[in-house]
Amino acid sequence: MALSHLIAHHLQRPDPSATTTLTLRDSCWTKNGRIEECFRELKHCVIRRFSKDYGRFSDDHGAHPLSSWLKQYSEDKMSFESFSKKAMEHLKVELDKTEVPLDGFLFFGHEELEHENAVHIFFVQHNTGQFIDGDVEINESFYLDTSNVCLAAKINVTDWQSGDVHRAANSLTLLRWRGEKELTDVFVNFIGFAEKIDVSADTEEFLNIVSDYTKDLPEDVAHYTKKQVVDYCLEQDKIGKPVVINELSTQLKENPVPAIENSDGSVSAPPPKLPEFASFVSENKPESKLDLIPDKSKLRQFVRISGRDNNLSMSFSSRCLGDTIVYDPNSDSLTIKNIPSSLKSRLAKHFQENN
Image (cartoon, rainbow, N blue to C red):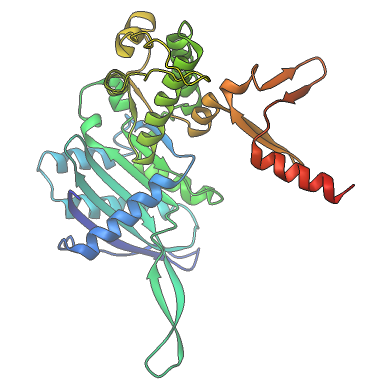
């Protein structure tokens, strides 16, 4: 792990009518296994959370000075400790405009990876747990609730300072605290978050491009290619990184569609060579984004069709539609052929028990 700095400060206001009390740490923790594990848990907790927002810093640096201090730190004009303390003092000003009670810690971490330089901010609370001590008595202790981060921000400093307008527009990731609107609004204002990206619309546009790319391919080849695209996108989401068109294009090129085995065991002719995906995008959709944050639910729906209500849950590969599964819009019905053996067995057992 390329963690270079990690520090936390305590902020507390048990009484809504009081001002916020800060307890500031003077120096970053010395890196060791325990410190790195704490950061890893915080980071991966945020990565696993759904419904994150993506955007950029506000241009109003007077009202939202965090980006100005971050710039000074990145230019070695301010230490990481000073950056975090200034941020805390600014957060206190914002909190004191409200009557939100709170008791927690604000973590600031700087991570320097090979292709990404990022600053993370997490709001973490203590939790309580019981344990049996040496006298076999039940006691209570506090511990950091690193598995339940409710507020967080990640600044991709590399993208923010790239000079590329599109990359800068995607450089901020924000996790909101659902159900705590007032505190979330304070945090959003403190970060200086602006211009939420419509992840769903971006993903829809991207998948339309993939559909155009595969529409003239044989059915099996098209399905395999779509699955490759979805697998790559889901893996990027899993590690908290955007989908990059050039990287995806390389993946498709380096992992060509294998020869398809027919039902009689014979192997069909080699599938056609696919055009380079990045070139296809630049030629047919030159206005498209070169990287994006995908919507996982839309990705999964691209290769699977699913739905549920109180009595029925169904999910199947989209390639089954029109073949083993036929939809009749006039009668609003599905006809299913070649039922999976496990389901067939359950149906037979149920029919036998009830007749």
